[in-house]
Each structure stands twice: as structure tokens, then as C-alpha cells.
Image 1 (tube, rainbow, N blue to C red):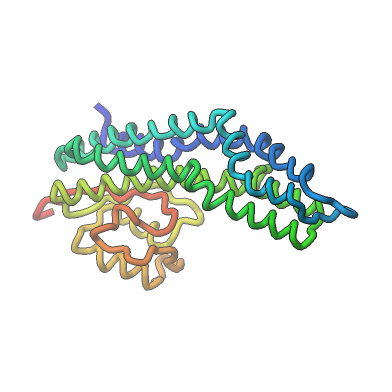
Image 2: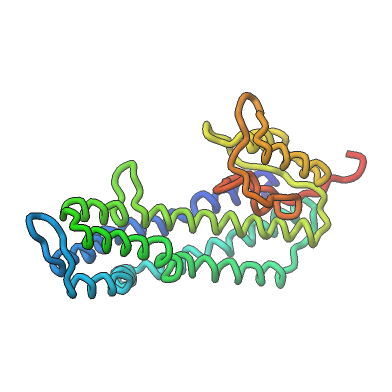
Length: 287
């Protein structure tokens, strides 16, 4: 039987490696989307290397989302998103095993499945048409429209499209950055939500704050990982310490999400894009 630390490490692995296949799939279709967008230059008037508006250009911009979604659909992005959601099942099993191993009790399957269903639906929505349109396609369309209306150069416009769609060594495209953020955050959100539910349902009175520390880890995360176990009675003071941007080991706390409190700490943890875990835990009286 795996130990508690082995189960925690396995869960960390799911959170870290879960998005990788989806990111590889996204990278693989970047060039195809880019080529589809370059058709803009066949539909816009170009004079002395400068763009100008035309009815064909307006029609192209109106069909921008369709062109991008078609390129993604033809090259298996939807299947990659579907495969990615399998990580929620892996996390579910990991968390159930962990809480049983910790002696916290059993998380009811019906409770966890209801939570998982909501998280999966939100994640798929954010990774596909609804989310991509809002955070990638709509801003790209606005920038392209602005370039056409103000006569930007062909080269500047092409470079702008590249920034949105094509990753380079050392620099992710806006598309890839968005997919990475949504995929990673969704798994951590689910992990935190299940841990918060476990605390509430099983009457747990503490959290274990776990995860690796790196050079740019926030001060509060360093403090809490080193502390390991934080009692519920200590949480308000610890959260206040971080929100007030106090100093720990010469480093200033930062990045806490407004509204963080002991009732949502497992979900929000150390702040925006925090990669640590707050696992529900029971400290027996007298210890």
C-alpha cells in the first residue's frame, strides 16, 4: 500500500503533468491556425506595404472565429480537450485514497461526482468556443480591425498575428498561454474544491499545506509549506499575515486573492495561480 507521502506525490504529478498532452496538441495546430489567418492578406487592400479596409476584409474578420475553430477541429483539438478531462477522474481517485489514508473518512461518491461534473463542464467551455472567443479571438479581431482601419504595415500585422498564435522558443503564444492557464488552474481548482468539501463534510479542523518550493515561491507559501499543518484556529491569522503583505524570511507576501478566508482557503490557497495544495486534515485533541 502506498504511503501518505506517495499518494500526495502522485496527486502532485497529476496536477503538474495533466495539461502536457493538451499543450502538445495546441502547439501542433498553431502553424495551421496561423496559415489560415494569413489569408487575411488576400482579402485586404495593401498599398505601399500598408493595410486598408475593404468589404472583403470586413467579411474575413467576421468569419475569424469560424476559421480558427475549423482549423482546431480538423486537427483534433476537441479530442485533446476530451482526453484532458480524464485527469479529473485521476484526481478524484487520488483524493479519495488520500483522505482515507489520512484517516479523515470517506468522501461520498455522489458529492464528489456532482462537483466534478460542474468543474468539467466549466473547463471544457473555457477551453473551447466560449472561453477562446472571449480571451483570444475577440482581442485578436479587435487588433486586426485596428490595424486595418489605421493602415498598419503588413509586417507589423503579421508579427501581431504571430504573437497571438505562434509560440517560439522561450515565448508561448497567447493561445498556448491561455490553454495552459485554464488547464492548470482548472485542475488545481478541482483539487482545492474537493479538499474544501472534505473539510466541511468530514468535520476536519486543519489543512496540510504541501508542494515544492522554487526561487519565486511567494513568502506566504514558503511559510506555510514549512509549517506543514495549519489549524483552523490559526488560519485567519495566517491569511491576514499574507493579505497584509508581511515579511517572512526577508521576503514580502504578495498575490493573495481578495476574499480569501478559512472557509475557502483550500480553493484559493496562496493566491493567484498558486501551485500548492491545502489538503483537509484532522488534528486530534491533545496533539
